[in-house]
Amino acid sequence: MRRAPILRIDSAGFPFIVGALALAALAGVAGGWLFATPLAVLALFFAFFFRDPPRRAPSHTSDNDVLSPADGEVLVAGEAMLDAAPPGSWRQVSIFLSPMDVHVNRVPASGRVTRVVLTRGRFLPAYRREAATVNERSEIWIDHRGQPIVVRQIVGILARRVVCRLQEGVTVRAGDHLGIMKFGSRMDVFVPADAVIAVKIGDKVRGGETVIAVLHSSK
Figure 1 (tube, rainbow, N blue to C red):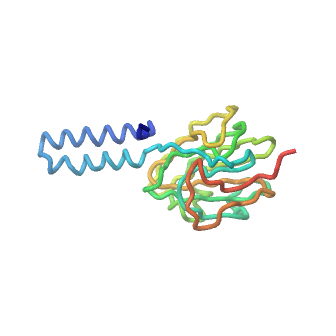
Figure 2: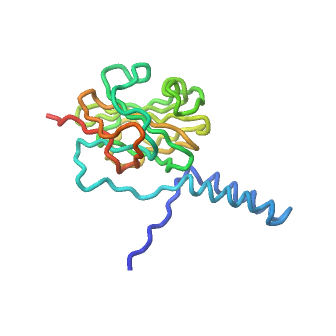
Figure 3: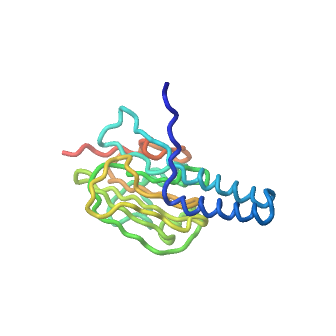
């Protein structure tokens, strides 16, 4: 008999879950279940929000496929926004994460991490165009066989912190855990200009599973 997968929760959620449960217990002792129930429900929401479901790329995925780093809805798919892209020539895919989406982030392509930069900033709604340049964000550069890929975790009006667990110099594989963003946010992925974008605006994508771009074959 096949066992059901165990629910995994990202470690970043433990303080929220434990804190809500502790408050629920105190409220129950002081005022009864009527006061404890909303806090217990809040703890369940935190467990849901910080869930880390297993993901596996499709069997036909090739080494040149770029996987979605997050669950959510595609906001940008095509030419890079000039005011938001890193220097150079790029194509861009941007993904908006609602509070109901899985917020664990994944590595889009295998390679070596060459740069990790955290930029402090504002907390505009993540779907707004200017959020890419003024909001707080982390930027991760990955060298995939000589082809650069840039991934940005961008906070939103609810997401007040990005957690990036990658360090410069480490070797990563597509689908590996990258980090997490808290409570609604956005991810931008920049690929070389000769890459082919495989999604369109409005598409729903799944982190670590959906192919969002195909890189030009390395020589």
